[in-house]
Image (tube, rainbow, N blue to C red; front, side):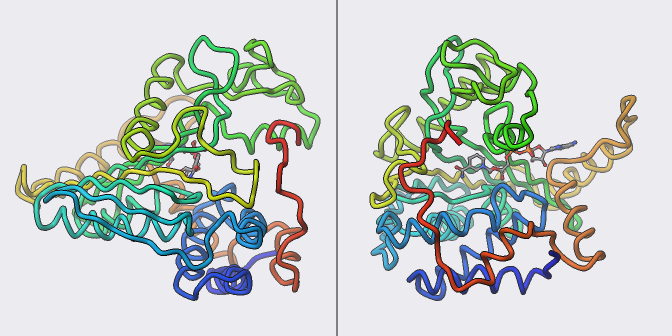
Length: 350
Ligand code: NAI
């Protein structure tokens, strides 16, 4: 089923309002999920709505949170989300970071006691639209081995980077620190297909091509990705005072409890280092040069981070809307809020 962005956003927002979120929180959440779907990041779009409505219904996402922000210094602050909607916490945290970075050149905003905040690219794009450079990172539930280990310790701990240019383009680099997302393993399972031996390990920590035997994912680039996911957990978890490492709550463990996740935004005003016009012109030059550089055999061109998502968005707009799989569409148009199927789900079993 193809839906235009307003139809899709409207259906998602209606579910969240009916689940008990206040209008502006439901709107923010539906907006970020639509942002993901229209860029082809369907793992972080409408597919998640039913899980969230179940979590809200069971009390594990505070429907009417008492969120607080404390500015702890000229360039630092801490947001407490009261385990409310993570999308709102991350958006509001970014608004505070943008304000402080404009005033003082740099801002570091920690966020604690939040729930899942989806695609981090959305938040770094907020800063890029304001001519600011930013990095955002957050914790995720433990399902990744540390390099050389056999049992999960870290989450897929994503990190994103955004920067403006002199034209309408923006660099939006946004990745999990694992070789492959868990959703790709589930997709292989559904087709009873093997997976490459570089994606995941079995219960002994050995690489496996059998998607049914996967017991953990692996970090990107071996020990280097492991160090990067540690950095994400230290800055967004240990430093914000929430559970860290293997103590981070699982998405599906107990939907009646708040997830107590952490996130961190770092926002920098480039004009404190070089004239803004120079920075933006040079960023445009970087993207032009990359785009004009010779592609390798089998590649049509060199893309800048975020470019392919924008091409998917343009494609949806030209071809009648965002493609939503039928099961999800049927759920979105139904009167049902959830089917009680996520609570205490074994994340490796399905
Ligand atoms: P991915 O592997 O699809 O893309 C990673 C980055 O590489 C993107 O910036 C993309 O623009 C760039 N890229 C991909 N192919 C490219 C190409 N051919 N040329 C140039 N650049 C290219 O992303 P991944 O790791 O699967 O993450 C997907 C989403 O999941 C992200 O939005 C991430 O924030 C989100 N996520 C959120 C989590 C959470 O707990 N909130 C946990 C894990 C991921």
